[in-house]
Length: 370
Ligand SMILES: Nc1ncnc2c1ncn2[C@@H]1O[C@H](COP(=O)(O)OP(=O)(O)OP(=O)(O)O)[C@@H](O)[C@H]1O
Ligand SMILES: [Mg+2]
Image (cartoon, rainbow, N blue to C red; front, side):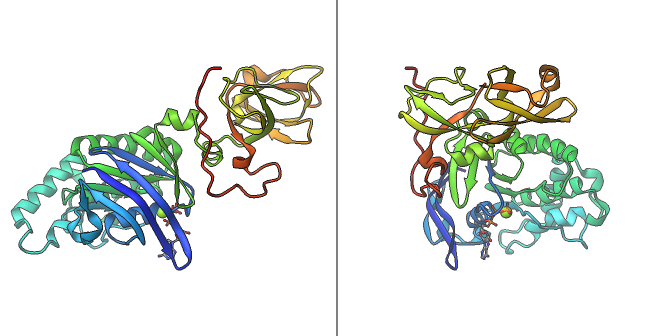
């Protein structure tokens, strides 16, 4: 099922939590919604499921207006963010639940329901758990059952709201691979909400980055990682260091910084901000360098030198221990930029703009060779 969302807005009292969402999900696609807490991910999912209604906008599935269809008729499979299984029902009964509560005329008979549940238990690789109660399962097993319950109704669209949120990292990794195979085999169209970037990029065909009720960027891992569309996405993707630079003929420069490795960009001359990940700056020992090593902390393989710059700026970079064993406190260095993204200061909220200009669209940073 293809989903088309356009101009979707939703307020709670005076608080606008979805500020015009446009999103097209292709039939059979697995989309991850990634964004900070409160950005509107659950609200968007609830609207698609029919548990909430938007104030404005369009929601169509395969060309049909879904806002005119009641939740129970949408055939949605939903695994909620904080939604326990029914504790007094066995795994088998939990999975069968969605079928047993159907109106009589569409409800399969008992034998058909049992057959469907057996099939799902096999498919989800949990037939040995069929007669247990939820209290007798591990967290990861419970999530498999929750997904089984969502899949039982043969949903046209599967919505998963942080289904692995409470689990530890190793179990999450297992479930991730498993979920991808379940998705591929079931052929459903899936929207998956997560806080976890690795999870989003590993699982999804495309990732949607949400920030404060808006979609900031839609793309593949590479597109979002290498070409963040806004300062928000750059920061969210870990580019926590913001260096003030001057752009001339598509090249960024600043005292004490060597940015020659960055590609030239079609970019207006003038002040700008370079967003860089801590691992994409290499400090190079240089007696005339304008950055000074204040101290160096270590987490095993990675060293984190704290550097102070010519303008009083203090940053923490990350270098492999192997490459950095000559860095000592007091030493001066040149900072070489290996990768980064430029944004004009009007977008990054620096230099006289105390607030980012809200309605301004990011300048597309096309890779134009000059
Ligand atoms: N029923 C409601 N009444 C009032 N405000 C609400 C309601 N539901 C959500 N909100 C508000 O809407 C905003 C978006 O909430 P939402 O639950 O969609 O965020 P989220 O991205 O899912 O966050 P999280 O990652 O923490 O789950 C929040 O500011 C929240 O307080
Ligand atoms: Mg949520």
